[in-house]
Image (tube, rainbow, N blue to C red):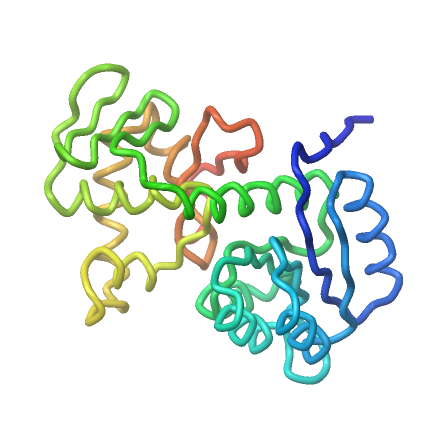
Length: 253
């Protein structure tokens, strides 16, 4: 049986779920991995705790009575902009994932999930939130890709790759948010502007062009992964906890 590594530094996490048995399992498992765990039985209780304490991470169930997980996420995000929020969704509720991300969630896991997957998601979000507090490096690294943000140059395996200005901006945004699920709307509005959001085929065409330039096999991407019915996720192949690639041709974009 594979073991999960203990966190190298303390990390507080608030587990929000209306099922006592699941909260107990999560508290035991997360505590064993080095997390300091608090619990909330509802979105309302979570809001009360978040008003008085800043948590590094918040694990929040979408389907709860009362105000619900998505609305709780939106309110917690307003109160705690630097906390990492991971939503727990049901596998066949794809709209929940999009709504959760639009409400400010950093990532999501789907039920049923394995402890290793959950810990990987939590750690990835923790790395991103802590990295956001430090200065953005002028050169981004991922696998055999190197991107110089100041000189606007991309290298792949030491060879320069020509990108159009918009291709560069799209890839730069993805690499700056590597590991995070990015919805179609978020990508369009962040890269093209706030008036965009419905030009899905426009985004897909740019992703196809980028895959041809940076992937060994564009049909089986290692970097730009499709998040079915949600958007995309930039994966760093050098990250041992990064999600496994899914062939682009086998899932809906």
